[in-house]
Length: 115
Image 1 (tube, helix red, strand yellow):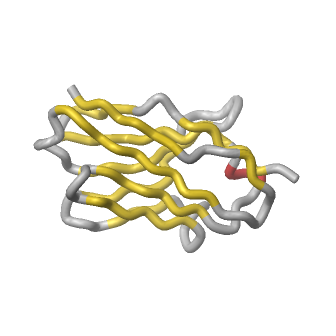
Image 2 (cartoon, rainbow, N blue to C red; image 1 turned 60 degrees about the vertical axis):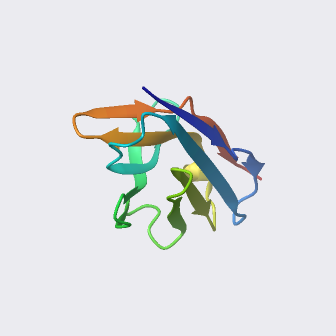
């Protein structure tokens, strides 16, 4: 089992920045990638960004050039730096820990972008 602890969600105004963090613990040795998904009210969960064990990153088109994902390999943790936030970024953000054949999910952290 893998446990994920997320932090950093908040209410911010458009154009502001926010940083989300996620730390994994437990049986993390088979780690393949970690990342973030989000789910807005009434919408399906969608991919935001991820980073592989070797450091390759992937981003959704909607967040490319605004969000940056990074990894602390010593702690099996990821950080999502979100800049130039928009109201459409409002969602619950879920940390994802992927091992071959399985995904673990955090409980989610709320990000609200509103003036």
